[in-house]
Length: 133
Image (cartoon, rainbow, N blue to C red; front, top):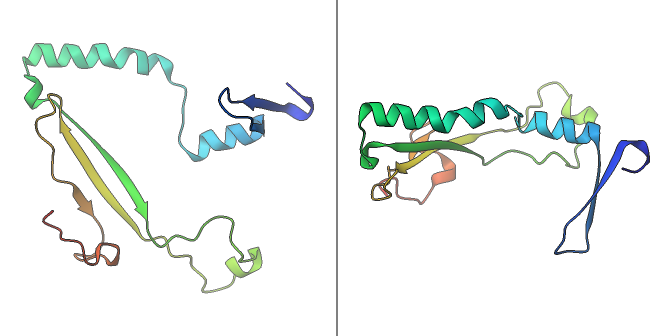
Protein backbone atom coordinates (compact mmCIF):
# COMPACT_ATOMS: atom_id res chain seq x y z
CA UNK A 1 0.00 0.00 0.00
CA UNK A 2 1.35 3.44 -0.91
CA UNK A 3 1.20 6.64 1.09
CA UNK A 4 -2.08 8.39 1.89
CA UNK A 5 -4.08 5.18 2.25
CA UNK A 6 -4.18 4.55 -1.51
CA UNK A 7 -4.01 1.06 -2.94
CA UNK A 8 -2.65 0.23 -6.37
CA UNK A 9 -4.58 -2.46 -8.20
CA UNK A 10 -3.14 -3.95 -11.39
CA UNK A 11 -5.02 -6.16 -13.81
CA UNK A 12 -3.05 -9.10 -15.23
CA UNK A 13 -4.23 -8.72 -18.81
CA UNK A 14 -3.77 -4.94 -19.18
CA UNK A 15 -1.11 -2.41 -18.41
CA UNK A 16 -3.57 -0.04 -16.70
CA UNK A 17 -3.50 0.64 -12.97
CA UNK A 18 -6.28 1.80 -10.69
CA UNK A 19 -5.51 3.93 -7.65
CA UNK A 20 -8.15 4.43 -4.95
CA UNK A 21 -8.24 5.46 -1.31
CA UNK A 22 -10.00 3.48 1.40
CA UNK A 23 -12.51 6.31 1.74
CA UNK A 24 -13.33 6.17 -1.97
CA UNK A 25 -13.86 2.41 -1.74
CA UNK A 26 -16.05 2.78 1.36
CA UNK A 27 -18.21 5.42 -0.37
CA UNK A 28 -18.40 3.25 -3.52
CA UNK A 29 -19.73 0.30 -1.49
CA UNK A 30 -22.25 2.56 0.27
CA UNK A 31 -23.48 4.13 -3.01
CA UNK A 32 -23.95 0.72 -4.63
CA UNK A 33 -25.46 -1.01 -1.57
CA UNK A 34 -22.63 -3.56 -1.37
CA UNK A 35 -22.45 -5.29 1.99
CA UNK A 36 -20.24 -8.03 3.41
CA UNK A 37 -22.87 -10.22 5.02
CA UNK A 38 -20.93 -13.38 4.29
CA UNK A 39 -22.68 -15.46 6.97
CA UNK A 40 -26.15 -14.91 5.49
CA UNK A 41 -24.83 -15.46 1.97
CA UNK A 42 -23.19 -18.74 2.97
CA UNK A 43 -26.34 -20.00 4.76
CA UNK A 44 -28.92 -19.06 2.12
CA UNK A 45 -28.34 -21.83 -0.48
CA UNK A 46 -28.81 -24.54 2.16
CA UNK A 47 -31.95 -22.86 3.49
CA UNK A 48 -33.40 -22.54 -0.03
CA UNK A 49 -32.63 -26.19 -0.83
CA UNK A 50 -34.35 -27.26 2.39
CA UNK A 51 -37.48 -25.28 1.48
CA UNK A 52 -37.53 -26.75 -2.05
CA UNK A 53 -37.02 -30.31 -0.80
CA UNK A 54 -39.65 -30.07 1.97
CA UNK A 55 -42.18 -28.65 -0.47
CA UNK A 56 -41.22 -31.24 -3.09
CA UNK A 57 -41.16 -28.50 -5.74
CA UNK A 58 -40.07 -29.53 -9.24
CA UNK A 59 -37.57 -27.28 -11.06
CA UNK A 60 -40.36 -26.07 -13.34
CA UNK A 61 -42.02 -24.38 -10.33
CA UNK A 62 -38.91 -22.73 -8.86
CA UNK A 63 -38.52 -19.21 -10.27
CA UNK A 64 -35.88 -16.54 -9.99
CA UNK A 65 -36.90 -12.92 -10.57
CA UNK A 66 -35.01 -9.67 -10.30
CA UNK A 67 -35.68 -6.04 -10.99
CA UNK A 68 -33.59 -3.53 -12.82
CA UNK A 69 -34.02 0.21 -13.20
CA UNK A 70 -33.37 2.50 -16.12
CA UNK A 71 -32.98 6.23 -15.47
CA UNK A 72 -33.80 7.44 -18.96
CA UNK A 73 -33.78 11.20 -18.32
CA UNK A 74 -31.20 11.48 -15.56
CA UNK A 75 -28.36 13.95 -15.87
CA UNK A 76 -24.89 12.46 -15.42
CA UNK A 77 -23.11 13.28 -12.17
CA UNK A 78 -20.15 15.04 -13.83
CA UNK A 79 -22.08 17.70 -15.70
CA UNK A 80 -21.38 21.26 -16.74
CA UNK A 81 -23.96 22.62 -14.30
CA UNK A 82 -22.34 24.38 -11.41
CA UNK A 83 -23.32 23.61 -7.84
CA UNK A 84 -25.00 27.00 -7.54
CA UNK A 85 -27.18 26.29 -10.59
CA UNK A 86 -28.21 22.93 -9.16
CA UNK A 87 -29.29 24.60 -5.92
CA UNK A 88 -31.20 27.37 -7.70
CA UNK A 89 -34.85 27.70 -6.68
CA UNK A 90 -37.14 25.75 -8.96
CA UNK A 91 -34.35 23.58 -10.42
CA UNK A 92 -35.07 19.88 -10.30
CA UNK A 93 -33.05 17.36 -12.26
CA UNK A 94 -35.19 14.89 -14.18
CA UNK A 95 -34.87 11.39 -12.77
CA UNK A 96 -37.55 9.49 -14.65
CA UNK A 97 -37.04 5.81 -14.05
CA UNK A 98 -38.48 2.66 -15.56
CA UNK A 99 -38.41 -0.52 -13.51
CA UNK A 100 -38.36 -3.90 -15.22
CA UNK A 101 -39.03 -7.20 -13.49
CA UNK A 102 -37.39 -10.12 -15.29
CA UNK A 103 -37.50 -13.80 -14.41
CA UNK A 104 -37.59 -17.43 -15.39
CA UNK A 105 -37.81 -20.90 -13.89
CA UNK A 106 -34.97 -23.11 -12.70
CA UNK A 107 -35.26 -25.64 -15.51
CA UNK A 108 -34.86 -22.82 -18.05
CA UNK A 109 -37.85 -23.76 -20.19
CA UNK A 110 -40.08 -20.84 -19.18
CA UNK A 111 -39.36 -17.11 -19.12
CA UNK A 112 -41.74 -14.62 -17.56
CA UNK A 113 -42.89 -11.71 -19.69
CA UNK A 114 -40.99 -8.62 -18.55
CA UNK A 115 -43.12 -6.50 -16.24
CA UNK A 116 -42.73 -2.75 -16.72
CA UNK A 117 -43.48 -0.45 -13.79
CA UNK A 118 -43.82 3.26 -14.51
CA UNK A 119 -46.06 6.11 -13.45
CA UNK A 120 -47.85 6.38 -16.82
CA UNK A 121 -49.36 3.78 -19.10
CA UNK A 122 -47.28 4.76 -22.15
CA UNK A 123 -43.83 6.04 -21.09
CA UNK A 124 -41.86 8.11 -23.57
CA UNK A 125 -38.83 5.85 -23.19
CA UNK A 126 -40.89 3.03 -24.71
CA UNK A 127 -42.13 5.07 -27.70
CA UNK A 128 -42.28 2.92 -30.81
CA UNK A 129 -41.83 -0.33 -28.88
CA UNK A 130 -44.63 -2.87 -28.82
CA UNK A 131 -45.63 -3.59 -25.22
CA UNK A 132 -46.93 -7.04 -26.16
CA UNK A 133 -43.43 -8.19 -27.10
